[in-house]
Amino acid sequence: MKSAIKEFIELTDAEKKNLWDKAIFIFDTNIYLNLYRYSKKTRDSLLKAMQGLENKIWMPKQVAYEFMKDRVGVIISVMNSYDSLKNDFSTFAKKVSEELRLNKDDKDIKRLEEFFEKWITSKQETNMAVSDLHNDTILSQILELYDGKVGTGFDKDDMNKIIAEGEERVKKHIPPAYKDSKKADATCDNNAYGDFVIWKEIINYAKDNERDVIFITDDKKEDWWNICKGRTIGPRVELIKEFSDITNQEFYMYSMEQFISVNDSINGKKIDTSVIDEVKRVPRLRRIEREHSLSMGLERLAFTERKIDELRERMNYLSDKLQYSRKEIEEAINSRDIDDIPFEEKHKISRQISFAEQIESEMHECDMQIHKLMEEHFRIRKMIDSREFAENF
Image (cartoon, rainbow, N blue to C red):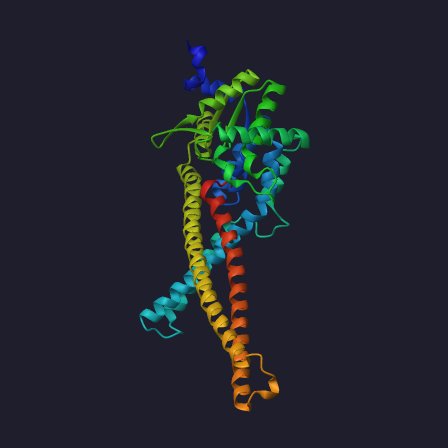
């Protein structure tokens, strides 16, 4: 019976240890990108763990592609976070001065600002791995560690077949990647099916090399994990079965914090809880940031919708006024020769024509504003769809 339903049976500790000893380790894109977000202590600990497995690691081409594509954006985001903290504290100090009616040159406020500036700069210098995009020490270490250990990926024809298969799997909610289907973007290669491309590469590698695989990811979505009543039980059984059926090898998954704990335990090291806590905290903080960003986006979306409605109402009002004004002008002229119209009446008609031109100018301005707001509305809607359903960093 066990062999018939083996994908449902959790591995014993001994089986996990045996798999750990013989498997190839594959890390998801988010693991590498998070290295830029961690403190120096945590980052060094994770890189050391990877280096300890240097003869047992491999990277799918899709992971390499996603890492290089998103790396700069993550670095800049980390840089901006420190600048944002400095600006936030400056705003806070100014508010304190105003609320307490302190002098602009208050010594205590100045000392507080100087202390925070010194403290945040020290943290930035210690923890921020990259301050110059042309001197990326994390990239250098990863390039050295994975030299000759990156997959070749798929050619165009195979990729088209994989994307077509991915589309069918999304419709049927077959893991992985169906939670990423909203990431489809004509400007981003394989963005909607990146996880599925990675999965196909992993399976092909395991089959061709007859190797078991341990996959480590910070992705918390249900298309990778078996989640029951809010609790993550383990990898999706569908993934374990598909992997076994195609490769006749074993597959298992760990989150990054699980990987660190097991790795330290197997190597007889004391588990550093501060590293575990940070690894857990970073994805949570990023989800909070995305939720805040989503909330701000929804507010801006509602604002643009209100402004568009207001401008359209104004356009309707101006259109009625323009129609009435033109009718008055036509009635005033009433097919008469311009020379037969009295001077005072000509002056009145001239004012009416000028007024109509002003209305037309305002209508044109409203139309331009509506066009810009609709473009912004589309851009925000697209951003919200992307952030609401998936995030791979």
